[in-house]
Image 1 (cartoon, rainbow, N blue to C red):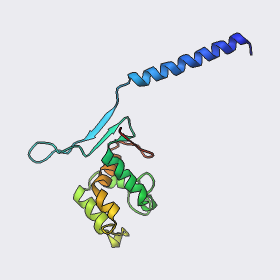
Image 2: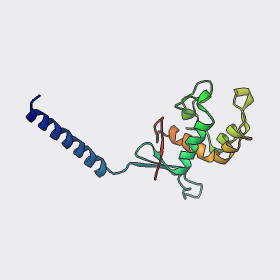
Image 3: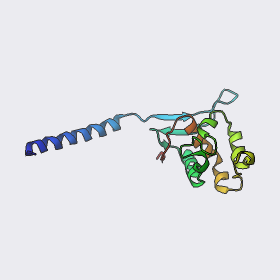
Image 4: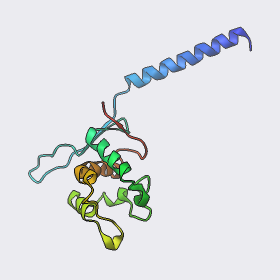
Length: 150
């Protein structure tokens, strides 16, 4: 390879890296929030906040950590799309927060769902877990690793 060719290649690579960095810096953050309307026409605080696909608010991040800590993927699948247990991506499209809480905390022996009401980590993070799974169900976050919004 000639020295001139190597020099051109180095400069082209540097230009591509610089252009990519500039494009990422200039791109506006894509943000998604789930805001639940109340009966009075006002809205509650956002259930979750997602920026740039996999960056989530602290509560949703704690929900994801709870999911992983409790190894819920053993029954519901790594992508929450079901295995032995049902798809939570589909279930949370229609299941209320109260029904979700009841299912997780009280269990459903006939369906094979154990009660997690005696597990303090789950009790403390049940709303965070719901926020994470609702964000997955709404398509606001992809499956896989999440990062907390700084």
